[in-house]
Length: 128
Image (tube, rainbow, N blue to C red; front, side, top):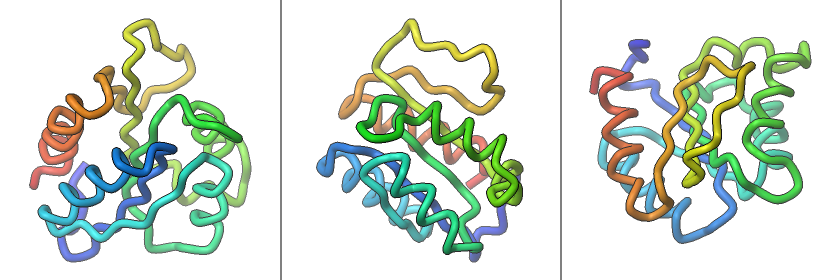
């Protein structure tokens, strides 16, 4: 999953502002530009209007539209077809979370303690 370094733009969907800001801050240190959404519905709106997003990082448990529903819409709605091939990282503090229909990277971590694990996984998968 190599993504050209100069063109990395991530969409971070997370309902807790402090966690979203921490993730964006860490990604920024890696040279990754970030856009942000506080729920899956807003994430879909951002995807609809931004062709340059090439990484998606989403929490599973969010209001309005959760992370799994966000992924389902990306995989089933024609207007999001171009985003089906980008690296996607989804995370949750719930160790029982295991969607049968999702072959994306799944990271099961607690929120604040898991940001380091999340960022290290992103770095490893993107070879940065």
